[in-house]
Image 1 (tube, rainbow, N blue to C red):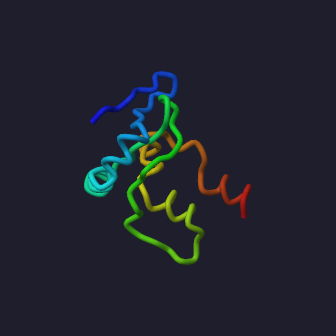
Image 2: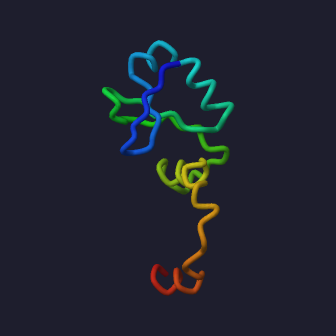
Amino acid sequence: MYILYNIVMNIKTLSTTEARERMSDLVNIVSTSRKSIVIGRRNIPEVVLIPFPAFWNGRFSEITNINAYSKSFDFLANEPEIYSSKDVKRKYV
């Protein structure tokens, strides 16, 4: 599989031509690995193929479900907590 590497954004990007030819393979890769694949043209990312969330809460919007239940924000797991629950409640509740 030919993957372009966008140095500015540090993202591997698959061309739309290759994605079209290998869509079934890409769906299988994303589904089993639970990792996202970026698809774009001329080394410019345009869309992301992400795994469907393991859990779905009908009370929330589609984008909220995708963000909350997919691995979109797993990179934050190792980040320090800079706000306490009290801070968040004071500002947003």
